[in-house]
Length: 435
Ligand code: HEM
Image 1 (spheres, rainbow, N blue to C red):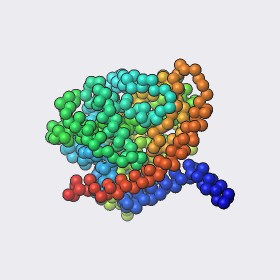
Image 2: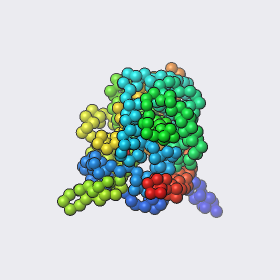
Image 3: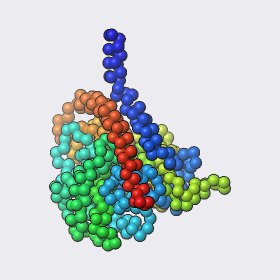
Image 4: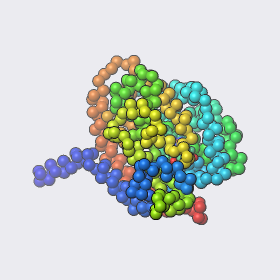
């Protein structure tokens, strides 16, 4: 009896060390069973690391949504209006019109972009000291930033709440830590539809007002807010866990911070996989070709590890070398629909990080993974405050994070399986192209 009790206790106490990993593996197996093994991994057996860029840049690697079961899942997560999301529009006139507006809205001179970021940081960082989740800390800043980019006026509090509600809902469902709440997202669509005439540049005239609102919601109030908040959560986590780097970033010149940003996005790229559907055959050698209609799955984390010594180690000094020589594509590849914010995002991230570092010292003992489902737990101590040792707070944070991980991994397994099944059932992308 006593032995059985002790064994049960040992199993329960050790849960955080083995259960989350097993659940993640089980989830991956379940997802690929439900989704089918339709993708060709790149790099993989067919295409090695050395041809990664060449195949990604190939003109026939251009299909975005049509013909891949995987697209049903992304459309489900990005609803409403995924058919108008720039990321998922097929090449053609509509795509060109939308991409032009995005480029123009993002073409902010460097000085103005820095000033805008600073203004939004002052308004949103406030007195945020204590225990925070970095993604939550950052979302109001990028909600305000995106709003000003689009409307050229300060973001009202009610609009900020709508934007955060929408972005949070999308990223939470993407990470499978929560289900979709469509009404929250529709509220933002209604708000944007009513304000279309206030957008600071003309929107594509061939789109209906509803399509214009979906386009704005997808690119600026969903992707922009989610990606910037995630990128900043990674950056601040890295600083919180490397005190030497944090100090140098606080006191050194901004070039060092740029290296830290580059290394953060190498180790924690925001895209795990970007997929493309081939619109024609891609020859590999004299005998072999990737046939038209194949789904290519470009694996960012794997590409970013290849060719680096000790690739798992965080080392900003790697970026002394010109980036072009390195396997580093945090914003995609130039020849195949790269991120339109590739110039603006690092500028804004640097200023936001400087604003945080000017105010707080950061410490974190929580786990830091690429998908960051814990939203980046961190202790912020105001810089002027008397320095107490954070050791006890960090010990508590570590234990709590481990136990949260047990519960969260089970939630992700159940909700993720449900959403993959529901997305297959709804077939949003499949039905759009083949009703
Ligand atoms: C650090 C922040 C960001 C990172 C690391 C990032 C990364 C990426 C990557 C890797 C892609 C290309 C994926 C592919 O090849 O399929 C992409 C596409 C895209 N990103 Fe970003 N992004 C960031 C911020 C933003 C922001 C602020 C916006 C604002 C509008 C944005 C809008 C888009 C859009 C619209 C696309 C689709 C491009 C197209 O297909 O034409 N991203 N992003």
